Image 1 (cartoon, rainbow, N blue to C red):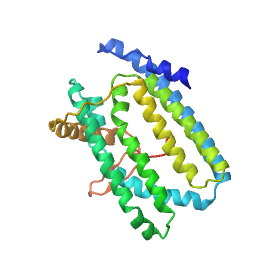
Image 2 (cartoon, one colour):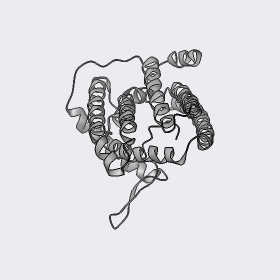
Image 3 (spheres, one colour):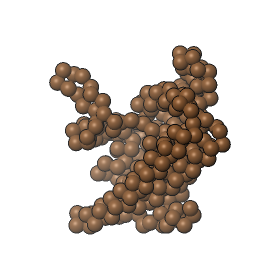
Image 4 (cartoon, one colour):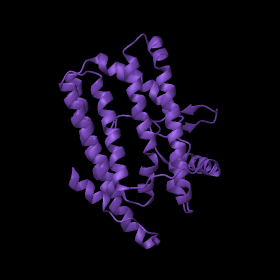
Length: 267
């Protein structure tokens, strides 16, 4: 694992480029991302088949119950910080610290809400074993939100090869952890712990390939600018991306699968 990660970390930071230089760079990045995505999909399919043989239906049901709560909570996690860092035409260095601390605050708030509401959710679903599952998934959600800034900084610099290597390693770690835990008879924890392990490894890898650490400063105007760019990106992608959520003439929202939040990488 060390060799590909070291290669990804040494990938040169992309300077400002002309339009003629962007096309080869984008095509090269697309090649890496497509192969990484294909690798992850294959492992996800194999993992699903194996776990279907090793786990009980109740394990799948319990994990899906927990995902209902986590998925609803995660809907409130995106204030547009990631979209701002990627799509802003201006220099973003003075806003990166604000984006990180804003994400950290939101992640801590949402994680705390899940932790506090876990007993209530368990009583609603009549499943006391849902409490520890939700608590661990809350930690996993926290880690995933906190690493958003680093992932988008790498994406902004078009270092798609580095992201592809990280995503492929995460998919492999998720597969190995899930199968090992299921084989060991850990039931629903094959889902929960493999996702947590994958998100923690993802955090370490992203900090390794992009060794940036925040300073304690906050610019309030960043939030409004990020929200404006996030809204623009959402409106554009809703028109262009198949499966995106769309508003019908009568005002109804037709949901798609683009906005689903997965704590289990590769799902």
